[in-house]
Length: 107
Image 1: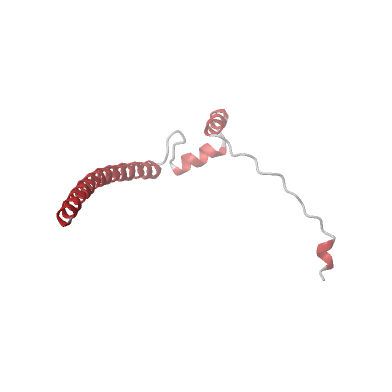
Image 2: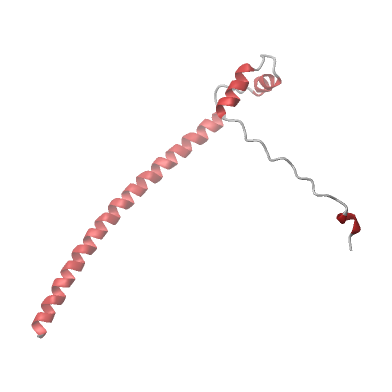
């Protein structure tokens, strides 16, 4: 029996606050003093806070290109499936006719 755990009360932590919105972040940045440490860090790393890093821009560009490629592939697949459906439908109708013809000959 663990006597130490019986005497402890469970501490309920407050819920986490909601993360700030983009607008709140931009407002906070615009209100920051020019000597705010974040600006000196960005200057040291060569990053401009008003525009994303080149690697992020490249990543977004590649994601957009991939999305467009996938979208084109889906459109092509949709066209192929529609054509195959029409072909199967025509083959099914022809099969029904052939079956009806064979039945008519056997009666």
